Length: 467
Image 1: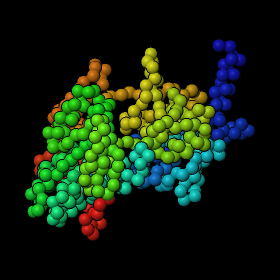
Image 2 (image 1 turned 30 degrees about the horizontal axis):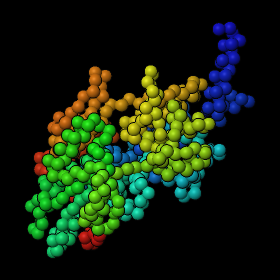
Image 3 (image 1 turned 45 degrees about the horizontal axis):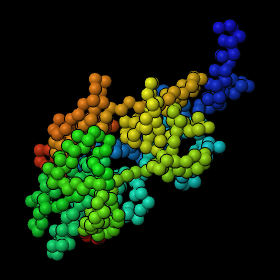
Image 4 (image 1 turned 90 degrees about the horizontal axis):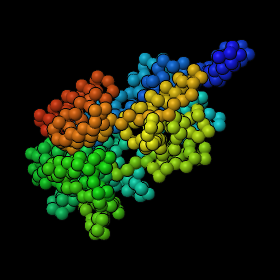
């Protein structure tokens, strides 16, 4: 390359780096390091923050809670199998040794892409040079938000505590109820949604009724409780191959769960649910304990940001992103995790949609952090490529299904082997040694005794009323 071309290229690269890190052309001194603001400390935000540990940037991580939550095991808190500290870790503790990161507790309510600031619920503002939006997802009731009062979803620790109380107090109310019809309603448990959360919740409720509580009551037999799992589609766990979906259904039924497929929910109130089968037949289930696991949509923050930029969110409330996870016309803004309508761009393959699962969010977080470092060096970003390792779900004691995608081929597991794989995989991905030890201890105790270690509930002035 001629010397003049090399000089021009060098100057262009220096200019790009200078713009990125705020270098003054007059004196060559840095004004400030680039400010990276991360909204949300879920799997994506956590990984992005960790990956920027050694980058020459100032990182601010803001979250509406003070903890990172391992959501795949949240249902175990809701069903008294684990205590909250086993799956939640204080954000400040996680990043206590990362000198370039500041943790803030606050809720972002507005984003100004022109001024490059965000506004918090308390009125404060935060500036940024690069923005990573990892605000996650919320429960979706498909336009029937009034159902949320009677059928809580499971996204936060507060949700888990509420469901735990609802489940345990239903048995308490049944113990006090003299009317057999009303008693049966208290012992009817309905889980709506046949994805991993719904399957795991229904299987665990069956274990509580058949293994944990028998012998503890005098007027009811907890094993007579009925657990109904309702799925609108033709099979459970639609992301898995049909053979594994069918295996999951059979394993649930062996645990005592009634599985209702191709059935839509048409109404939910404080006393039960109304269902309509594919045949058009309708029926009502009297139940005082309904759990929603049927759907999620992107955080409202995504829709707000999209309106600011003139972008349309998809049907799930997710923000469409470019191949490198940035937004059109705004390379300084990236959206990751459940909030991103992203595609994996692989060599010699058509782009494919990235699922809203924790491994995808982690990979997005690392990708975005690496792109920020590339930009600081004057390099272009790269398309996101998602490495899919497969799917897994536990159903109950020694019952699970696993679909693994490995370089040597695709492997299916079911039953005890799949359950052991599920156990070790979740322990491995937990944050911190203490959490792993707590979970292993609680699971071992539950396996050998059939007891659940976190059955304490607060605010028990009386049994819950309908709804």
